[in-house]
Amino acid sequence: MGSLSDGRLYGILDLNYVSSAEALRVAGEMIDGGVDVLQLRGKKNSATEIEAIATTLRPVTAKHSVPLIINDYPQIAQAVGADGVHVGQDDVSVNEAREQGGGHLLVGKSTHSLAQARAAIDEGADYIGFGPLFATPTKPDYKPIGLADIAEAHRIVKVPIFCIGGIKLENLAQVIAAGARRVVIVSGLLLAPNVADYARACKEQLQK
Image (cartoon, rainbow, N blue to C red; front, top):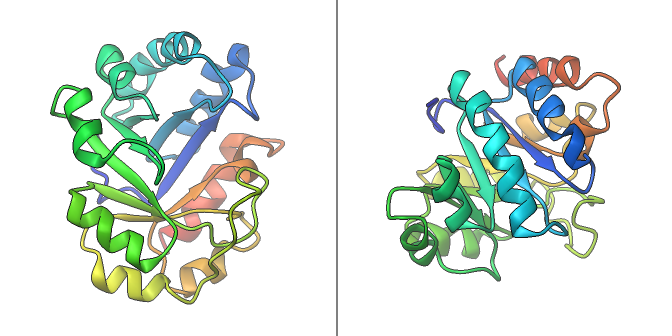
């Protein structure tokens, strides 16, 4: 498995944008384009459907040493042999997620402020998502936090920080300039005419 600390581009295979039937193909394109971490997220899908998709994804991510993260479901992550689980502010705690997943899973947590970032680290999160930086159709109810706190977040948090929320190829340079080292891209990547090419272009900027 690749290291989260070495990862730069975190892709979310969001089933709001990709049909279940297309999930495996799109995941392959994301990996071909250089995505370092792959999360499966299906807020409107049943646990059974998510587990079925995760089961098909796991051999592909394992082959390419790309960590597979399951959003919200520690038990599914454990069942399919995924590398980790991601939880939000309104989900179970980091410790609960780790215990429900068998004790060995990586656990990431979404944070929306410096205070939440500190709290997630105190909980024992292995990495955090920090955002949303910009308005995003993926989370329309979340108020953007902007770029001002990125540098401070990296000063106070010693685990990998993946900035998230409305990040696309066209604004990636300003996100990096504000201090981001790692980013999550969702709609920009999944809606691109060529997913692999889009991922490559993003990865190239992140590696400069």
